[in-house]
Length: 235
Ligand SMILES: [Zn+2]
Image (cartoon, rainbow, N blue to C red; front, side, top):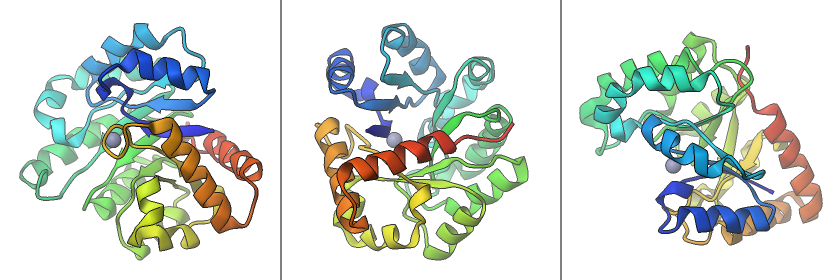
């Protein structure tokens, strides 16, 4: 199983959490908020086979992010996993809208080349989708997508993927799963924000998807593993 979006570094005991995942053979994309956080975590995660450090620059950390833009560009060349990056035009991020767009524009230049990219798009999915198209960045993963059905359809047409968490499948957004082709579905825990027990949450999410697809869990795991391999940016 693969948890494509978990903030391992924000748990009380990041290393302990990473060890639990390694033992459970849970693949995990350990997203970060800033390049400096990625740099800090990298030596700790180097020995792990299943927990992969991802280079991030979160839209709600834009002031620090602007100062670390140069680091993002240089670190990205050796990094296969990118996240979390994106835009946040909700009330929380609205005041920095134009700065977020400027920073993302720069970042998108360095995410090409067969990388896995997980993006935040709260209240900003149409703009983000357009920016991906303009930058020629294909096949990224929309994490915790809350946009409209028409934007979801446009994202599918553009070759993108969606990672579902347990809350999405339990709430009013659960209908989204019906409209996303099976070969575009991924799974995330979004811990510790959505759960303090990401391994259980990820397993639950696989089970919920298996039920909805009328497949066994191993069949579902096989499809989603394939999807994870396919979800890579173009060269
Ligand atoms: Zn996140």
